[in-house]
Structure formats: structure tokens, C-alpha cells
Length: 343
Image 1 (cartoon, rainbow, N blue to C red):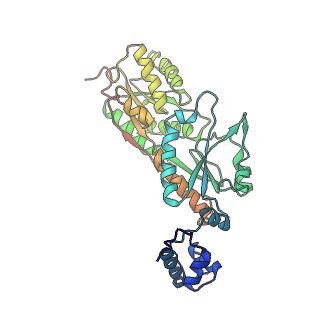
Image 2 (cartoon, rainbow, N blue to C red):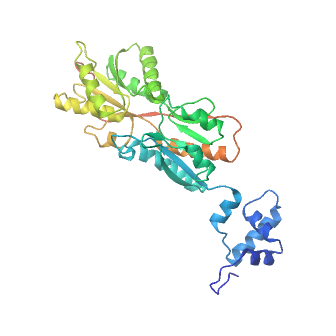
Image 3 (tube, one colour):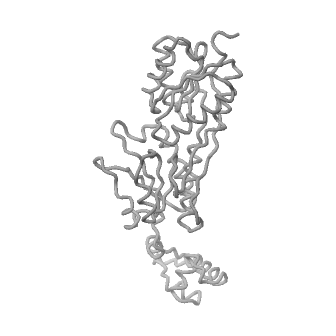
């Protein structure tokens, strides 16, 4: 029966009632392999009956864990990262899975006064147990040092030899998008690439080139950087050609929205005069007018899988680095139609 006097039940009281040592109570409640299943059950039932709840901070201190993970978010000079739809969606997946596994999440901005923070120190001083990097360029030089110092981390949307990584595989979504626009009669496809300093910018472009070539499509490619502004500039370049494409595919939804903005300025009707496909399937793609056909990037699922991967690393279930690919898809909305000039 639980203590009804209002006094806090002590570990010593649980030990006495269960007939074990105080240290055995702690080990049993922390699922120590040194304690038998029978003793664990007896101690847990006694603790529950008496209403004993161990201090979380004391438990974590004893286990040398914080049960906190750091989500490292890239710092931008021109805008707040969470003003972009990608970061909140990734955070959704990270938070949901972290909650299920008993972790809390700390947001870590990767720079302070244009200098990268000492992320190794966050591990050594027990601010967090491990790190998840949300967006990082291919040229980022920190990962070798972090691996050398034994820092547990996972990369989302990047690859680095020896590091655990989770990425969106653009192949299925791109294949389905190209099949869709081919069926609508499009034979010349413009493509505005994302930032080629990033893994996903390069991978999306390479997959597009290869699959468009397999279909025998004519392609015109301009380089962008995932931004709305690069969509504006890319549309101007592609549609200013003597033989402009009848459909434009963009390396991101934000870039595709820039194409939409250009078309409104120039009174070009979508999809009657130009079809348009984005990449990501975030909120703005659904809210656009017309709704944006887009390749689905499973950002929420990737956030969840990144937590799973880091949890496995922290619990010593991984002996080698792991690189995972999360499959893309394709969402058809109203921005794609029959190729201009065809019935």
C-alpha cells in the first residue's frame, strides 16, 4: 500500500520491504543485467505498491546518460531556419520518435558569431548524448574530427564515410514524375537544380539526368540553390530559349514556387501553357495555386529514422556505420497538364 502520509517513499524503504539491498533497488529499476528477473519483478512490484518513483536526474547521473539528443540546425544569415518548412517537419519526426524512446531534444544552432560551435564539448560535458545534423554541405570538415573523438552522430541529407546517415532516395519519385509528364505528351523538360554543394542537390540532378535520358527526353538544365529566387531566375533562362521546355521540374518546392511567381509576372498559365513539378511535398506545395505536383520527400519519417539510428548507436547495437535511404514518391496536383500545343 502506498504511503498516505504525504511523505516521500525512500529507496531504503523499498529495499526493506523487498528484502534486498538499496543498491539492488537501483539496479533492478535500471534493468541491470546483474540482477535476476525474479528479483527485478519483486523490486518493481514493491516500488509500485509503495509509490516509489526514483529521481530522474539521479538515475541519469548514475547511468552516465542525459537522455537528451541535440538536433543541429544550420545557421543562416538571411533568415531563421524554422521559417522554412523543411526544418519544422524534420523536427516533427525527431520529437515524435524521441518521445517514444524516452529522449528529450535540444535545438543546437551550429554557429555562433560565424564560428562553428565545439560540438564535441557538448558530449564530454554531458549536455547531450548524441547529435543529429539536419542540413550540412558536402564540404563540411567537422565530421572526421567528430568521428575521431568518438562523438555519436547521424547525418540527415548528407553522406560521409564512416558516419551514420539517412537520406531521401529520389529515384522512385523522379521515375514516377517523368512517367506522368511523358504520358501528358511532354518531350522537352527543363530542370532547375538545387545547390550542388549539398548531397541532395547533386543526387536529385544525377537521377533526373539518368532517368530522362532513359526515356529519350530532351532536357535543359540550369543551376539553382533551392531558393524561390533561383526559381525565378531559372524560369527566365529556360523559357527565354528559342525552343523552351513545356514542363519545368525544380530541385525543391521553394524553387518551383519561384517559377510560379515568374509565370504570374509574365501571364504564363500553369498548367495550360507550362507544367510544373517540385520536390519535397511540404506545406507550401499543397497551398499553392494551382496545387503543385511534386516529388514527396519523407522528411518526417527521416527525422524518426535518424533518432532510431542514433539510439542504436548509443545503445551499442551498431558495430559499423550505417547509410539508409528513405524512398520518395510522387504527388499529382493541378500544376501538371497536357503539353502545350497538344490536344
